[in-house]
Image (cartoon, rainbow, N blue to C red; front, side, top):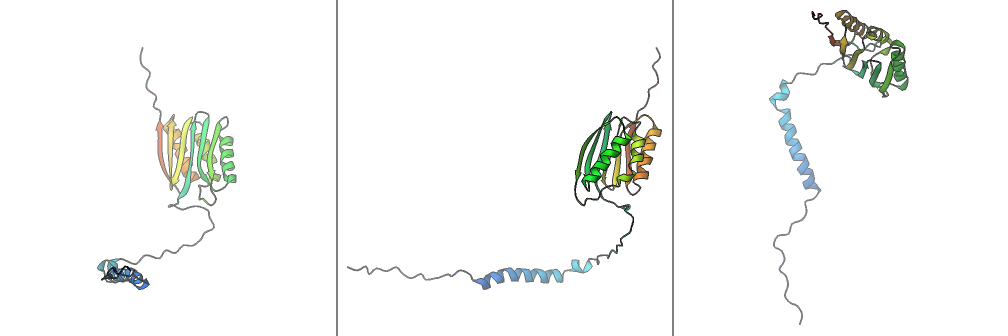
Length: 191
């Protein structure tokens, strides 16, 4: 006997949405968003962005808002640590040689990283800073963005001021923060 019992046909047949539905799903919210954005009062209240004209100059100074790569020097006794970023290996060798020549008898630890194209502080004016810091056994500075921070200890206010002025002369385009502590000599205790 043949199987005469059949399954009933589904009353509701649902097909998968086609490409038209997918396009509508994307286009309708996008269109409504654009209509709402175009007519919003906030958009009309926004000022036009200023046009900034720049001209190239021949000098290599970075200007008062200069943003240079990080660079730091730290001297503690006869050890000097250089760290930061310079544009090429020749600049790294230049900085290390400057320190060795201006702070004789020190051991220089080179932690500098050459990164192609980075904007670094001009180290050709580095000599005056090192000469002003030579009498100090604990001093250093770090360059971050447009700011140089001095740190360490000095034996006198005059030594501290000499170093601050040397840094200001070497990098006049950068802001100098002087956090150098001055050692105070306590009066002798009567016996």
